[in-house]
Image 1 (tube, rainbow, N blue to C red):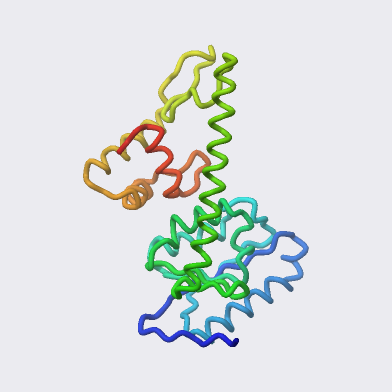
Image 2 (cartoon, rainbow, N blue to C red):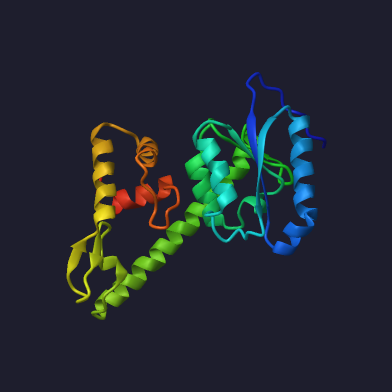
Length: 239
């Protein structure tokens, strides 16, 4: 059954994101051109304002730490766009875990929309939200399953008297002697900023925004995500 274009009074400002995984594809531009054409046609059909189309050429989907994707997500965070448009979901990510993180950090509310041409995902519709919620639930199940296996493995190591990375709490490092904990200045500063933000009554999402405004990043220098901050808060027992 043909899909009926959705009418809406609010203008959806979409940032398009396209990606190819090999340099050869990037050089020839065939896949990039095809994705660009699909995004342009979709935007015209559904009355989207396509504010930008960002390209990651010759970049795999193994991680979310891609220059183009981070720039597109930044536009969503700053309000320059309120929708992310992709030709196909696997152009965004092939990882269920990473998709779950994106859903939780960006697409779990009505403020930001995810649109995928080939997958018929439009989170402005009930059907689109259902598909994304199912995918997000699968991601949560995967995370919890991995967590259970990790807990069992750590317990086994402890029972044998082996030291594990879980012995080192966030905000500290293990000294060269392998026994003494020493404070990590950068991580302690981040913990202090989180505690201060929570004391000011900020929600977890607002805490992430506040940390970003202050210039805090991950150890790899990338933008902090809600799931990462929640994990840090849990480890440090910050309510």
